[in-house]
Length: 556
Image 1: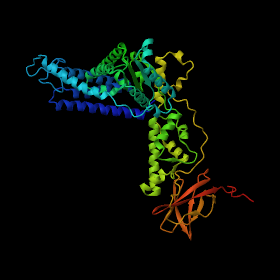
Image 2 (image 1 turned 45 degrees about the horizontal axis):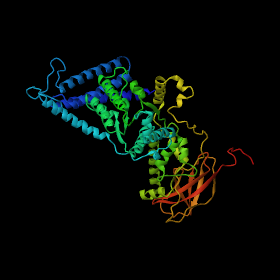
Image 3 (image 1 turned 30 degrees about the horizontal axis):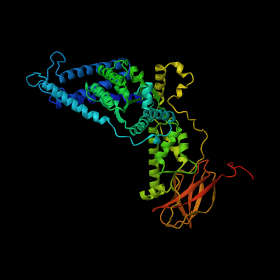
Image 4 (image 1 turned 90 degrees about the vertical axis):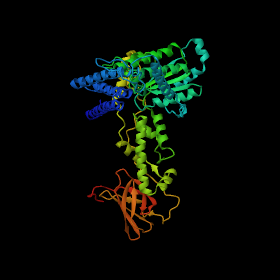
């Protein structure tokens, strides 16, 4: 469940947007000389949508308020629509004297001779032609080779590719040419990515690719959305063989059983189902794919027409590939730390979580490398040649501070939806709680060995006298500190020692330097980097040893 603070923030944002849309509708009316127009209608529609969403989020008197506001805006939209179409919307409604924004009008005399209507229709069709051209996409650059994990899903889609080659056998057996899939899964799980990879493979076989976002059509003017939906299926039928991908189908084909659903939204759903029935009746060679994060918002009549394809959160193999993509060739890993271990430590992460985490790590690398080497080019050199490394300790420290996106609510909704639309018997041998999550084993609970934070190695050339430790081992004193002594650096200005991300001032003591460091309880080895006013000078390894006893009264 969404916590109360977050709920109030979301509701407040929707209310502000709703008021803003209504102001913009008023501005659009004034800008058009107080003649109702399509832009005004679009803003009113977006405001009505928000009122509907807020009515779903609230209860009692507050919910009733949002329902009344939605009904008021629905009536206003209908009234404006009637003015635009030149039809009286009620007592006292006036017909515009001239057409505005493509609306048909009869001219100053009010005579409707048909020629003006023909002109208005032509203009509308031209606009729809322009929009339809944007639906056709070039081949996506990534293919199945770029998709990691998702083995079952890739097998299903590859089988569909093989079927597309054997049309003769399909025709002989009377197998329908239309294939329809309904991709369902939580946000950020890679639905769009794998569908685009599938389209890439199909376009190599002369398929065209039609791809739209459901919300793009809905954001069109009231009345135009139904025409756009009808045109969508006409284009698909005319350009077969093709693949039709509709993302956010819950915007276009809303569940008509939802309470307080606006009338225009139900009309769009009806238009959508009618268009789909057309390509089904024509048995067009079309692969139809719809995707959503919210299947419970999609009309049940549509669900009966498609095959459900679950897209779970990325599995370990997919997460490993994602980390490799973000880091490989840029940041090296220390010792036996690996991308595989990163994947094991991040169960329930989606691709967006991984992208945000890796960005946070890269920013940390940026700051620490720049602080250490003082020069951007030098830092790039140390990163590119692998002398500056990311350690397991540093990764885990940043991971503990990172908060992945909450998924409990959406996963619960998906599981409940599955139970509602499918028979319970289908789940006798299935763990329904794992349908949309990977089956990766949980990460090991034992802690990984501690390592240094960011580990640069010495550059090929050192222009000062090399630094070296005066001892290989340093005993930890009763106060938990160890005094590290080193020699060799030129006595030029102040020096600092960087150990495990901590910067310590080095104090001259005759012909050598002293730095006091407090190691972590489990820290037995570290690498010390000496930094002067001009930047990096050199480094050396140190080993820490515990005293014989912590007991001050210990008697040998």
